[in-house]
Length: 419
Image 1 (cartoon, one colour):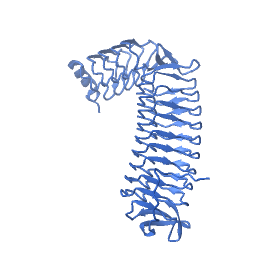
Image 2 (cartoon, one colour; image 1 turned 60 degrees about the horizontal axis):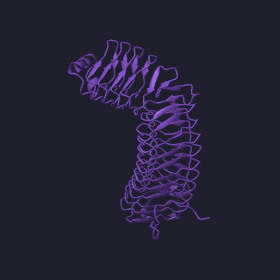
Image 3 (tube, one colour; image 1 turned 90 degrees about the horizontal axis):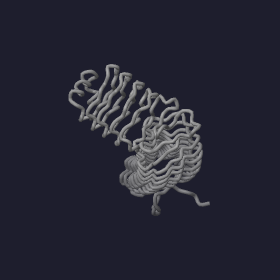
Image 4 (cartoon, one colour; image 1 turned 30 degrees about the horizontal axis):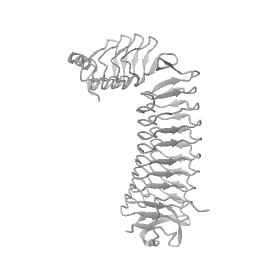
């Protein structure tokens, strides 16, 4: 059977590079390459150096070799070490044999000229930041056998259009595909239990994602600013959805929270319409607004709601983190006497909000709770409020001067100016 190789383009046939060009260190009965001292653009690593077989490409072995355009790694090598080809800006082609089992962290970090990747069978781990900043990488095939895609593995591979993730993968690390702006579709295989924090953040062209029944956790900011994402089905297996997980998904019209979800982070669904499975014991929706099941915490008022006024129910004691964030249509909100806490970023960037009366029941106003409410001219803060976090009224430039001075006198300039 024809062996698979990892290569970005067909490599021209070149002579084996001189053994003297490589620095090595012993590794059992063989050697590991720890440095390259030659000047060739096209490098063919010898299978043996000094009569001993080459077993690995060590850490930083070809670090910053700007002249390098292609590398052929011989049979017998099992490991491509951390930062092995870090910063090889002109590297367009690498051939790696099937015997390799590990591609270390930062292995091809910043290899801007690399255009495609087929990772050979046998590899089980793709290290963190392995292909970080490979700007021209357009496609990658990950073979069966890989179980972990490390954090930052394909971070800001902005030309990446397609990626094949095999069923063997169980973990997609944090920031793994962050900023892959050209990625259009992702199928996450059965077996994955966690989608890491920031995993697909800023994948602007991502229109569809398939999440399998094995996933239990969708991390913080996992799909943040996936502006083209139009639909997502959250499976029944999911129990936790991190903060801002789907925030900024401007094309996402609706989402249903399944029965098993017990924890939803602040700002997880800021724009779309929300529904909750009738059997869910932790959350409920009233008039399109997400609350905890007991009605005590207002979790999310969808920013896509075009109503200009809203009265918070009397059952609410906490206005949750980012609950009304970026509700641009909202001009007024009535806060009842039952509320004791206004959470961080609760009314962040509510640009049309002009006046707020905070009831005497409130004791705490969180960080940046009303920050960037650029139309806010009047706010009444009762003596019951004992703590206001930094930046709570940051960039509220329309606040009457008397109100600003009163806030600064009572709680300090940090409340108005931030840290």
